[in-house]
Length: 212
Ligand SMILES: Nc1ncnc2c1ncn2[C@@H]1O[C@H](COP(=O)(O)OP(=O)(O)OP(=O)(O)O)[C@@H](O)[C@H]1O
Ligand SMILES: [Mg+2]
Image (cartoon, rainbow, N blue to C red):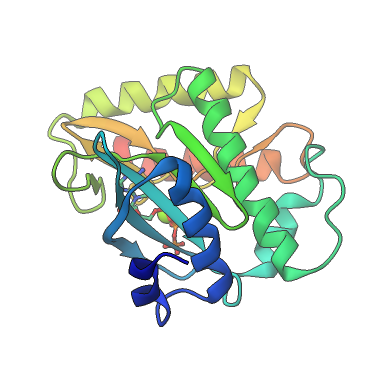
């Protein structure tokens, strides 16, 4: 393990440090610091030769296994998940990575996925010198413009039988007054039993947020 990763021994478990180390060989130089630490995941900014990337590091021990299970079971892309917290968290990270790519392919503005391994995903860093702030704490100046853009994104998702599932002001970053949709782990396609319920929830939340 590289010396500099040792300072993270009290912060991440050994397994996560090893994962970060492996990813660093190809994808980044150093860990700059935390952007946000949360219940399910911590998001860090990493420095590369060319700039920054963001790492979303899912917690293995304290993650909400039950919620993950609910969203993963029924998703045909992940048929082999049965039990085991570790594997579930890895599948969850992989699911967010794959969903980010799907969203981008549909033309939705979301962080570009870069790489993933185990419980860590690397993606485009949204921000300049500082990370972009969620719309909850940095509301758009032009709410009407955002309402149109986000409604368009929702129409696109509907067209592809896809749903974000946690779309609200906490999961949309305001980057130079442009909305960037983040936090895609729970997103599913129409085959999923929760699809309709998630659609209703997203529509209700977006309406409350942008049409209220
Ligand atoms: N690509 C990114 N670039 C810059 N900042 C980011 C990026 N992705 C996430 N963030 C920051 O991290 C925060 C949390 O990200 P995200 O919503 O994906 O995690 P979460 O699943 O909600 O985590 P938790 O449930 O533990 O709070 C965001 O509000 C934002 O501040
Ligand atoms: Mg979030």
